[in-house]
Structure formats: structure tokens, C-alpha cells
Image 1 (cartoon, rainbow, N blue to C red):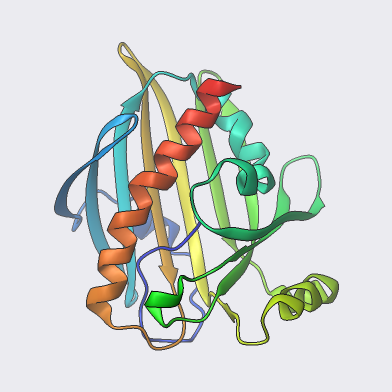
Image 2 (cartoon, one colour):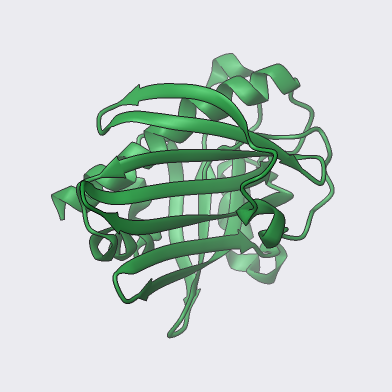
Amino acid sequence: MLILLAALSASAAEPAWEVLSDDSEWKEVGTRKSSIGEISLRSKRIAGVGCVEARVVVEPSPERLVAITRDMASAIDWSSADLRMSQKLASDEDSFVVLQYLHSPGWSFAADRYWVVRGEPRLTGDRGSYRWYRVEAQGYPEAVEQVRAISSNAIELPTNYGEWTFIPVNAGTALQYRSCADFGGRVPTAFQQWLNFQQTPAFVADLVVEAGRR
């Protein structure tokens, strides 16, 4: 749900859940070392938007991992990303809406980004999942005002959706993270890809470490 593989298009795309969950056409990217071990990465393009997959077996149970996704607004306290805002805007029994604002480093010459998503954590038997998808920030005008107070140039991600799955295995929990996002603006494709595959393993590791800490 943070900075993910971006495209130059600024038009929003509807979540393509069936294509995202389809195991075909994913391309191996390699592995990245992290504090929780080596994370395997793959990439795929769906409707012109870059998507990333991360896989790793971890110690925390699906129940503990889902518990963190239920509290995604707290990511400002445990994520290594430079979040300047992370707050819950609404919630009901099955889902919640969260706003997050990411500061872009000066060397990137990119504007800050923000997104509003609806998150749907699930625990079914011994398996867990967390699905999120973009909702219009304009539906929460007070939150947009807070964003503009930080930077009038911040860009809302036009596409942002994905899903975590947590399945128990003998060695612990098989974690899979799949996400598609359009960064918005005009950012070179090569830089988008580099940024995505640098940050995704760190975000996965951050969530797992927090689940273990709690």
C-alpha cells in the first residue's frame, strides 16, 4: 500500500482481482535480503499498471499478521517509509478507510504522494488475508485539507490496490504480497521499477517485524 511500481498514466484503474490472483505471466525479478530473510520478487503488468509480488516464509502466525493489517493506520510508527500522515478516516465491522501521506526525498525531485484506501482484513479458519483498494480522497475533504497543509503539490495515487495472504505451513506462515499502483505524475519507468523493488521488501519486513513485536 506504499510506493509501488508506477506508470506514467494518471488515469485511475479499477482493481483487476482475477488477473492479480492469476499465477500466470508473473516474471521473476530475483530475491532481496531483508531482516526477515530473503524475499522473492516477481513483476507483472495489468492494464498498463506495474504490479509486484513478494513471497517469504515468516514466523508470526496468520492471526498476528492480520492483526497488524487491522491497525494499518499505525504504520507511521513502525514503517521504515517516510510517512508524514497515517490516519483512519472511517471504519465498520468488516473494513476501514485509511489515509497515508509519503514524503519523497529531495534527491528524487518528485512531489510527495498520498492515497486513501479501503482495507479489508480477513481471518478464515487458520488463514488470513488483507485486501485494499483506492477510494476517492475527495470524499474526505477534511483529510485532503490536511494533505494540502503539508504540500499543495502532493499527488494522489490514481491506482492503488492489492492483497496480502497468510497461509500456515510447517515452517511458519507463507506470506504473499501482491500490489498494483500508479505513482502518478511523470516519473521515468526505470526509476519507478528501481524504487518499487527497493521499497517492497522493506515494507514486508516492517509488517512482519511489528507482528513479531506485538
